Length: 142
Image (tube, rainbow, N blue to C red; front, side):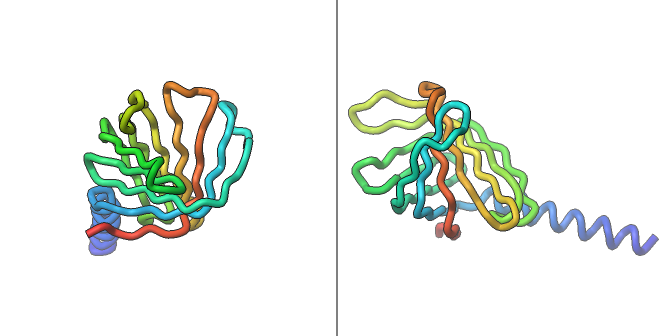
């Protein structure tokens, strides 16, 4: 009986730790951007520093330079990380806007496998294009 209680307690602690990660503000840094077609086939790769800032209510994407910065309002999200930003997945649906341009509805899928994290952005209004970045590092934003 004691073994069962210990195992259940351990599992609950691990689940709470992973869920707590979902409530934190994070910054993802990437140095390579891949542009894909609608089927996911690679079209081109660009070496550029990109920053993705994530909070519970907002996303800020800065691809390459400050002029292309986009702000997004989080509409919904799901989060399931076994090991925060190493093994797991988050899916965020957001509406993005950039000054002087129309709004875009997008889904960001952040996925970690074997310690490698990628972010895939799919824009509803552009079904024939996807953008994927390889995350070099992540940090909590204070």
